[in-house]
Image 1 (spheres, rainbow, N blue to C red):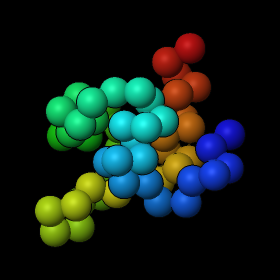
Image 2 (cartoon, rainbow, N blue to C red; image 1 turned 90 degrees about the horizontal axis):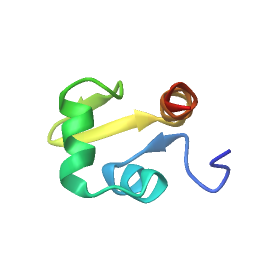
Image 3 (cartoon, rainbow, N blue to C red; image 1 turned 180 degrees about the vertical axis):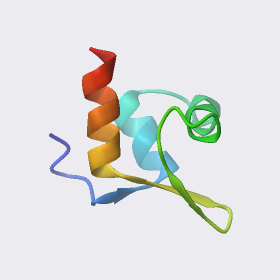
Image 4 (cartoon, one colour; image 1 turned 120 degrees about the vertical axis):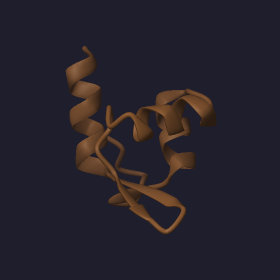
Length: 58
C-alpha cells in the first residue's frame, strides 16, 4: 500500500492519497486526527501513521 510514496508524507501527498482538499487535510492534522510532526511551518506524516489511519476508517 502506498509503495509509490516516500516514508514521510507532505500535505500534498495526503491530499492526493485521501482525495481531500488542502483545508480538510490541515484540519485533520491540526486536530490530531492524523498524528504528525510539524517542522517549522511544514507538516510531515509518517506513511505508517497514514496507513493506520486508513485501516481504522474501514
